[in-house]
Amino acid sequence: CETLTSSFAQIGSFVVVERSQIEKVLKEQDFQMSDYANEAKVVEVGKILGVDKMLIGSYQVFAGNINVNTRIVNMQTGLVDQAGAIANKRAKLENIFDLQDEICVSQAKAFGGEITQKEVQKIASVTSSNKTNTFSAYELYNKGVNEYYAKDYAEAIVSFNKAIEANPQYSDAYNYLG
Image (cartoon, rainbow, N blue to C red; front, side, top):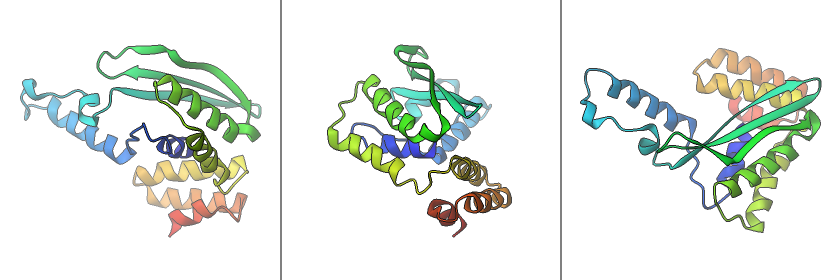
């Protein structure tokens, strides 16, 4: 997920909203839903973020494969753009980064963005510079990132150390450890 976000950030026509910004919006939404805010001032999540559309999705890992589903949601209407949906895109786990590049490019196009060849190369450079080709290390690293953003720092340290055990050259995991 983290490298997919970084891949989208390489496309000039996209604004990537960081997880911390989304957390701020959710806190604002909680406030607006409380008695402390006037109903007339309630702002939709998309308006707070300043986005028209949002990419959401899920994945499943099974028997050495990954299955990905994505949807593009119009933040004003709440409707899913069926033309931009990816259903059951499958790949072997060892090809996950190639799949990620493919999804990033196809979803960027589905958003209506123009993608230059230079941007496609930048997207590929995100995953090629991922610093690991070991899926287990990558999975542990992502677990650590999620724990870090959830402020569960003790568990994040455990996950980053396990990622380093799986791939001692995984510099991104070292970076989070400081």
